[in-house]
Length: 339
Image 1 (spheres, one colour):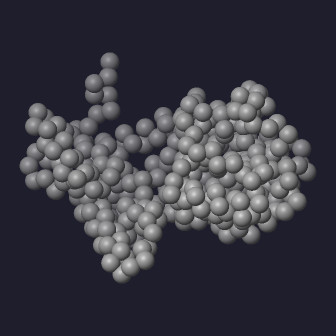
Image 2 (cartoon, one colour; image 1 turned 60 degrees about the vertical axis):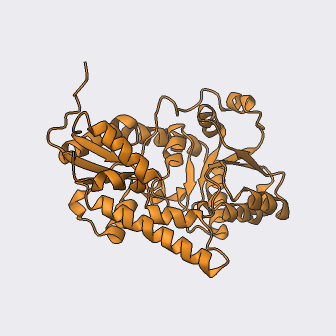
């Protein structure tokens, strides 16, 4: 199991030294080491990307039989217990957003003084505005005469992709010049393929599958608008800041942490809800704004890039993380081993 393997790895690493700080990214992997009573590190830090039991429930089906439902409930509660046990033994807990901070406080009842927000980030040298968007489209074999909408998601129910397809269908004639690109893989793909056929959207929606890291920035650069149609549990949304770093505006639902980033740019980049009607209205509104207000898309593009350069880059993220590591262990030095 991951618990046993991580404990074995921790014992091996700590046999030669006592670490100043141990950073945990996943509660099941961190449970064994954090419960170990010997060779304890001076400081323990948990980087919470999402709540384990909520992520598990969002990725699994309820089950048809009582036994399947019972097993799912048990597994969710086990993950919740493991995560709580780990968090309560950590000196500092880092989360990606104010939304995640509230979720941790409500779910695990840890002291608020231990919680710190470190937003996600994008590399502004990798994700940057294109010199020529049409040339990028040519390289990706994408049409130059259509409005490109892009979303990059795990294909699971909480991402709101089914609502997005219904929203495109609701646009009717207004969708005739749209091409929606959906990047990512997941268990929902067969259902999405069927829904695309049922809604007669085969000319307007393409499932791209997994997009390699070295091509991801090009898709952001090629798009006119990136969509975040999330239905629930958006702890941060790395896609948002990656797209903004490329100068591509993002339209998102008011779910989870999405408003924490997009509201800083323009309230028009937030839909009124996560249902299909709200998504359709939001897409219609922002595209009309781009069409009717010359220079508006370029203005948002510049503002988006500036926001990432200021607050959502890895240098800023690293500085905040070092501060937390030093708080967890006064002996920790970010300069150790440099030069």
